[in-house]
Image (cartoon, rainbow, N blue to C red):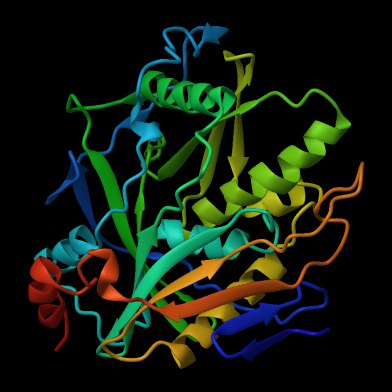
Length: 347
């Protein structure tokens, strides 16, 4: 087992078994808030899940390739709404090590299974707490028509499955406290709706696997992402609408904690937890108080052999960190309203 090693500004990890056992604490709900038109609101009612009464349904009906949809525009959300919610609910950050939206932890934890997906986030340290800021990578190529249509179908599935009390609905976010190894985390995440028993529910869509190969890819890549997303914040159930060419044909429920086994061991959650734990330990040793950094992962450029999957050969995962220069015109993470709120979150 090679484990991890660090060089100047680099963290390297070889995902091999056996790996260290890392405990993850059951997330505890701290508070909730809403986001409406990118602005913070104190609360947002959660819609209740209602399964479609009629199947099949054409979720792709109405999709216009020339139109611009909400998923076509990627924005880097500010951490300010998280901080406002903590302030409004009188919650202090003393004792925490990281504060972030779930998006950043999704990217980190998925790295050992989604080795071809690059990612980046910014971070800074204040009062020994590291704040992570989302950074969407700009792709040189626009999203494919297939991907855009899939996102459209996903939004349509949510619309027919959730009974909203406000129109347009306000995005509901929940803030949880949890612990990964020795790291105490404060994570905010958008929640789709609640189940009939009032517990959180995640909604997904997917094309029906057509053969054994596509089923294996579904288990390794989709189910692993779904597991990470729901596991991180304690969402117990995922409901997937399975489609064929955009037509919803069936609904299937997954229990989050059973997903690794249902995926036929196509991904190993132990490696994902071990990698995340080691990376967070490295970040705590690298990030200095008052400095701001860009942390990024870029897949290794290796020639692919015909018929080989990216999981066939162990890959050394390398994550880089570099200080951010202010020449890009972007204000510091802790400035403006954020700088006013952050000091109030400590005793």
